[in-house]
Image (cartoon, rainbow, N blue to C red; front, side, top):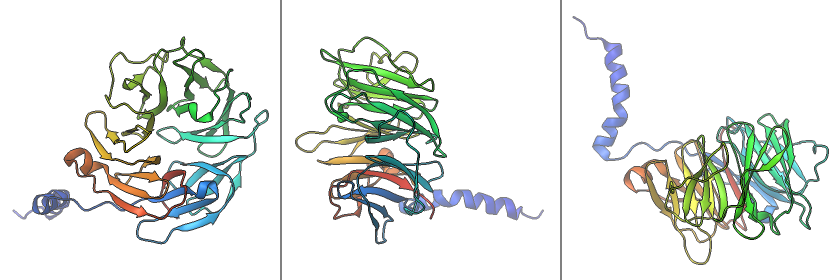
Length: 331
């Protein structure tokens, strides 16, 4: 009987990565993602491709950016507008300001699937905060005006977008503690429970689950009523969370170096100790990209979680007051 050549070739194809691991202890690295960066305090956009010169573009008032499905387009928040741009910063389209919205944008957040992106508008001086939610094609999904009182600083309002038509927001409660609000496609933002005695510093989605950074650790939030889990999902005390479809990053800002913890729902580890983490993005290439004021560092999450070998590699240095990062693909 003749050997089944096609079957044997298929088996070799499947076994090749395993043979490579057995011989070398490593796997071939995946191609690195391109990165979009808000730099120079919002006066510059950059596209960073590891190993290549960055493509800078002078702008004015950029505050945040989020990639859209497929990685070839992104939404960029400026203080006074939202733009849709290609992954090479080309073909800018300014989205119309929705009726009834005063544009004073401070932050963007995307759902895990990136089918919804929410922008927080906060003009300060006691003005009501507003959430403007876009679909992945740049069309308006809904707007919601948050009930008073607005926090004294927009950084005290942290929010996350679920995989459906909802945005969850945490902010300080009058008299102490925190309150959670849920805004949906009806354009109504509702406080979901009486003020919590615990402080919720940030929110992020990991897949279909919502997590809160509290003063006792990272706890899961019920998407039904906003209640916090009794136990902690992650004992790490953090005040900044960064999510994706499968990973969660947790970091505690403040004086001195603090650990950046990355968690996949089962395994976790201290990936690095940045003293000035500005943003973090989990790219499809299996890496996390951590941004400080001056440096963008690649972390291998696959080896990091399995072997505690994060292989930190600086892919951009000499940045100046960098503010935000997101992964990109395509031209």
